[in-house]
Length: 146
Image (cartoon, rainbow, N blue to C red; front, top):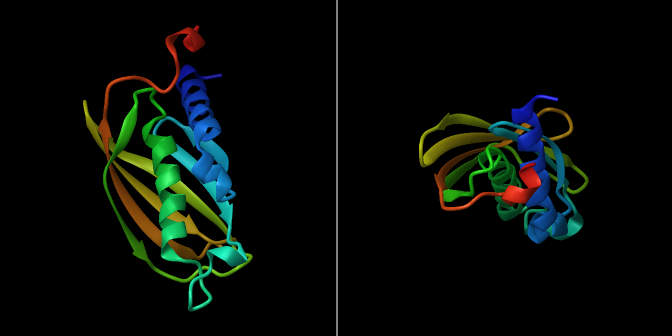
């Protein structure tokens, strides 16, 4: 297996395993690679707002989780510096959403990532842009890299 792909996969899985929020919302880590991640989530009845569509906060959380797994895929501890989201279409109870994040740029300390959320029919639900900032530390402990 490609070393970079293996590292990205191990970083994403380690973060996911420690991420009680994503797990509590029923998110599933579907795929990961260097600078990328795909996360799935089913819209539950308790995620609906007053218009009977998925609350935007849950859509944001889904995109933010995919962003986190992607920007930490190089084993450099990285946090969000800023994020924005555009809601394009509603999601409904029972929908299966997929958030795909891709790295657009990555410098010494900062990066830019785009996330596209689609439903099970491939319909665009939301677009998210995240800006990352690398902090001290790594995702995986040094001894696990051997």
